Image (cartoon, rainbow, N blue to C red):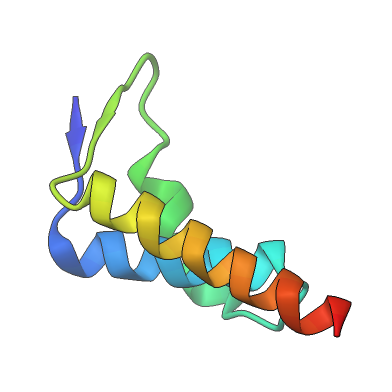
Length: 69
């Protein structure tokens, strides 16, 4: 099982938001994040999982609203 620490979780959150909103992102951070998931049959446990999901969804909804105006 892979457990993300808070720093990793924040990097992943930032990357996901940037990718989903077509913003530029750091390839170096993407490569680093990919290495966390390289081992076979790994499950992921993130201590900030619910916070991250809420934060990402709020950011996406905010951006959608801005684009609709």
